[in-house]
Length: 87
Image 1 (cartoon, rainbow, N blue to C red):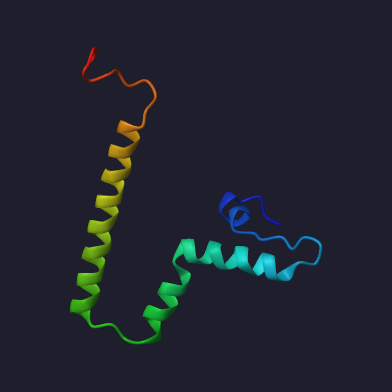
Image 2: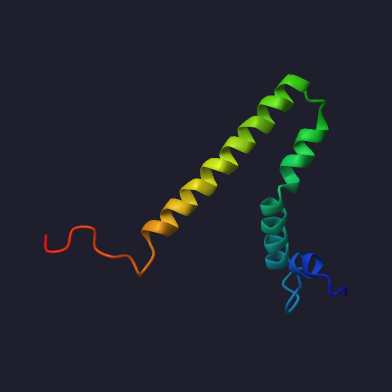
């Protein structure tokens, strides 16, 4: 087995002959990587206008999710001072 981090992070080991649990873990890993969606998308030809719209939507979603994660991390930090002391 390679020591490459990306390969090791996506390796699923079968423990005690429990193939069903390993298959569930593998399915979850592949879903996080977006493999099923890519396979579904490549099954049929996608119109260029729809592909542009999908890529723009995915880019907007990435920006929105990153901004929300930044805001949540900002509000949830433990060293935050009280905004209204004494109230």
